[in-house]
Image (cartoon, rainbow, N blue to C red; front, side):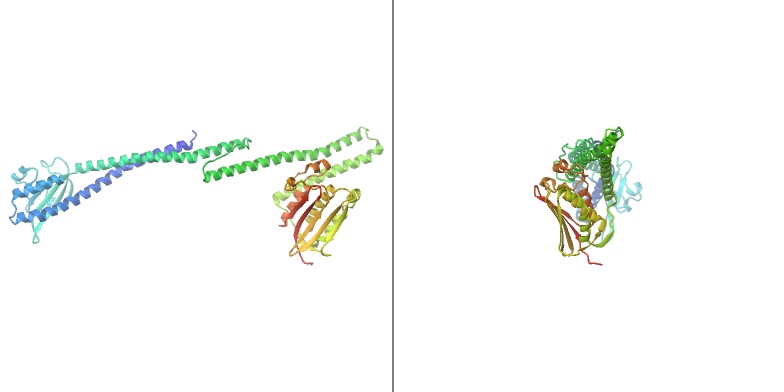
Length: 471
């Protein structure tokens, strides 16, 4: 059986109610009864002392008759609901506020209970033929000039005290029932502010699991549940972005693999079935080789990016002249520059500029940036590669006079496979991974790379490296 929060709340509520009710009507009622007994003892003992000081001394000095004493003590009996005995030193009862026959019969308490006068407080005692129920008795010794003259005994039924304790317990139980009603309201409120938000969040999580990432998740409270809901919504947004990225990734990689494979398959079949004459096969075999190299480069870039994400970029730091690396990299693009009549201008603030970095990785960065610059530059234009020392940093920029990058696309150029519409329309041979790899390498050096671009004017990529002294 599925245990929901509602069931758990109800079970907890019932357990608390049953436990409290049991405690109140067992331990609680006993404690109340004990407290009432102790309080009754104090009252009776104090009253016995008052009777001794105000009446008994006068009686023993023959200033108060036994009849008048009986009248006075009957008033006290009515007020306290306590039967009063006046007992002589030898144990004979000479006054009883409720039964004169005991006095006439010269009843002696020591014959009824030899230990009666030796105790101050007696609980549950009973004298057969005198009391029909258990009593609480107080024995007060009357002394004059340090001599025992007699005793005062006050008796009150324990049943009355028990009834009083039940009365107080009933009041407590009524208060407890009111408390339980209030607690029920509190439990309903707690259920509303805990279970309802959790149910809403759980429902939203299920919708997100089913791929419905636009499902609205709104929590009205401003507490931890609101924070949890915001976190779940954020997670759903990230999953949606990841899902979109995966779809885009699959679409891009499918496109980038399909185009060269289609060319390779088409030209290979044409060569095999003789559609392409033998004298022209060299040209098309060159195209097949070019497309194969492009697939190899794409695969290599994917593997490299995957390694960057999973294991990080392993750097072999050394001190080298970055100007020399720039010159060597620029020379590798001589053929591409001649085709488009593009010039590469090298501007160095110093003849030699030493940096501390991974030379191979920085050469890869420069290669990717120059490759992009040439690819998107107009014919008969110029590319500037500049180095400049500023404090402990060396700033390297690659600036072209190409088509530029739209403002809305500038933050996306670092994403895998991202290509602007102009890029894809102009050149479908790029992998869309070069700038992603470039950013990973620069970030691995704990440095930054930035883009400044104006559509129709050109683009400039600027990155920094730590400056070093020549070894």
